Length: 157
Image (tube, rainbow, N blue to C red; front, side, top):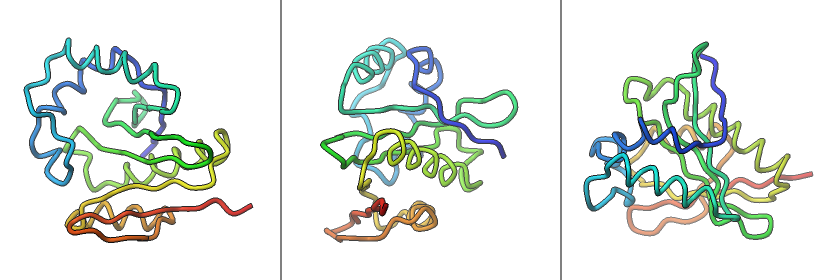
C-alpha cells in the first residue's frame, strides 16, 4: 500500500477530531483528551501546534486517493534529538504496516532534512504491535519505567 506523509493542515481537523474522541485509539497512551473534542477545538489545536518551531507534524495518507488515516510527528526537537509520536486513526487500517512505513518516512525526514542524530519515543509495554513496528524501523529499548518503554534510534554517518 502506498504511504506518504505530508504537512498537517487545519482542514485535517474534519477527520482528526473524531479520532481524538475514540477511546479505542487511545487505549495504550496517556494522551487521551479529558473532554470531548469538537471540530473547533481540534482546528484551534492544529493552528497552535503548527506554529511551534520545535515540532514537525505530518498527516499519514494512503492509496491512490491519498486518504488521510493518521498523524506522525517529531516533537521536543532540541539540537539533534527529537521525540516521535504516531497514531493511525482509521481503525480498519491498523495492523497493515502503515505505521511502520510512516515511521520510516518520518525518520528519513528527521535524519536527512533536520539532520537529527537521535529519535526516541515512549510506548506502553503492552502495545506489542507498536513495539514490533518500532523494532522493524531500528528502534531499541533503552529504558523501562513501570508500564512504559523508551526506545531510541541513532543516525550513524
